[in-house]
Length: 314
Image (spheres, rainbow, N blue to C red):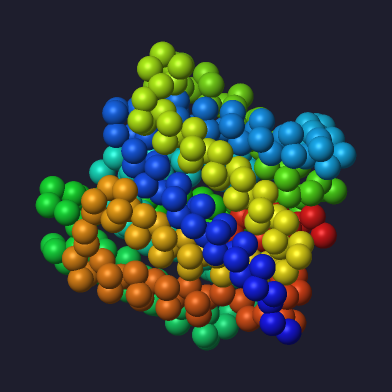
């Protein structure tokens, strides 16, 4: 069964939107804003936007005691902690390298899934992990791969975010979503994240008042947060229409457009090592992705946060 052209258009638009958030994050940190303040306002936008959509769908915003363990885990592993690493690495790394590093989520997911009993070992997917590891080495090992003065340490920091997303996704798969749908989980977790991020930003001196001087960085933050919320809602819709295996192909567009938009918006250029790393990472991602059993039908394999939330809700 072949996907209708309209669904492919939605898939590409979704990947473009998520890809754009990477150079926007670079711009958001360009004036010295630190992670916790940015994370707070990002969560405000996501909570308001997706919370409104959830209520318009006739769904309640749920914060019952039995859901707190799940919501706190998703807030920490799916928002606050990975975004700290994301914004810290955005200060030092080119947007293109951050885009390539983001592809490792699915590669981290597989070994975690095997350890938790969510997946079985497959040789094809193991080779995908090997290619992913080679891609990381291409980024951090050669002197020519990173801009002058950029430490490979920041690439490793950038990889902490995908590792946390993979942990979150697998725990959601293990625990389930306790009768909540994906948007309810994300809205609830974002609200919990606000409770964590607000005092952390204030105590650490990282509080950001975007209304004091709403400039280029603040515009980038607001735009990136709105894009993320809009694209997430679109992703959930697309999974419902075409299945998680089809929707997961947006990852290729996210990586490619994240690199291209960083070149255009940030005037970045990359060495051959970086392009080689991108090619090897994309190959690894293709091998690690689960095979679809039925075209355009929801898949039960591992994936990013949204895929596992969809599975946990079923």
